[in-house]
Image: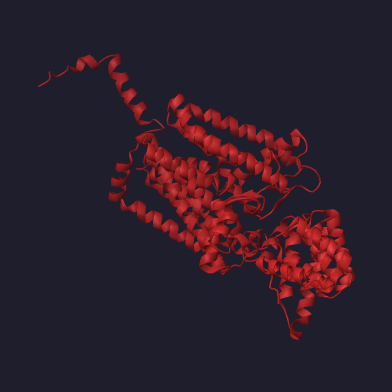
Length: 600
């Protein structure tokens, strides 16, 4: 038996120093948690599974109204309704999804997202609930992954993990990513993104080659679902820093394949968006870029706590940048300084802030893409960084005051109220996505100076009119057309817009006012000389007016710009029939059928 050490040996400095070292190790922000111990712990504490089940059930209920919705004309038509590449899962269609210009949808290359749409189409063609249900399913899976990521990263901080997962699941700012079918890319890339992060935590324990390869597969799938995943290699470095892993050659070399993939897809995406005209000039000067980026950085944080003035489309200011944009850089600097100051208490605060910054940084419009100043869908992953900090704060308050039941009840009561209010706000927000008219009427109420919402609402009203037939619907049809024309007139009072002219022309064609329609289409192609549909519509009018030569010139121009529109070949088939060239007429009719036009 070992000789007992006299207590007098610990009467001096050594006695006080040992407990400090032990406490320092215990409070380290990056403890290790093995996956085997995780499994054993979860098996013994069923309350965690019950809590997760309640979160998932409540989330499904909050989003349940979405199953009665319909596709909007805001990119849902591009991704689903008019997307010929998703019509089958055979070789030629898969080739269209993964290779060439036809794989670029709405100015992005994300073939895994488009492939998921093809799977939905194979299941139910254009039955909306299937597409929405898939989005919701991935959102629920992402909620579970967020829980496990926080749970593993912070050594079984179960309350923090539940808090983060719960508010990730039911926050109203995330409705856009779930309720909007075209935003499938958000929920899908996040699924593989979070799998990569969780797998990386496991890799740090095992360093197994097979797991490393699996991480590359997950990362590739995330990249090919949405280019926003390009930040993932930097997030892995952030985890290394948080876990106090040395930044040696091995740690850096492990990231090289991730960075190569991210850089390659990032450069390709910028080129695709440039070709698609997605890059805009709302921020011409360096100061403009700083103001807009800071405004987005600050506004996203503010809307986490107070999600007011939500809209599917947040327009740039009408007449210059107001005061909030000018002071936003100072507020952003203050938030950054606070995050750096928090480092004196440990790495957690700075980790959460950097996680938010890395994931939101690419969409702060430093390179202006699209014509919105902020977009709610951009918060889907970045909010995890802030929510986990709030969750850890709740966990700390609870752990430090377990014996103070009054405070515990007060904290959990407040959290309950926040959960109810957030769930209700999300439930109400889901309703706004019911159809295009409701969605863009909501935007118009908040941004009446923006042109784009009037274009979309006008098109929806005109499309409703086109679906009506019979004399009993004549008055209703005329009413919808007049409302659509009023929307287009509003657009043209704000700015010249080729789609507004084109859609006005379409209404006049339906009313058999061919000369008026031709004029509108001519104005459309003057604004956008590469507008293939405009040339096709001009050709259709000229065909009806008997102007065969002009019609042929315009339809050839339309096919040159876009050779995948069946209507173009149908018009050219009719023109060849007038010329008596039956062989060419039949060939063009065949092409029209090939590209989905119902040739009689």
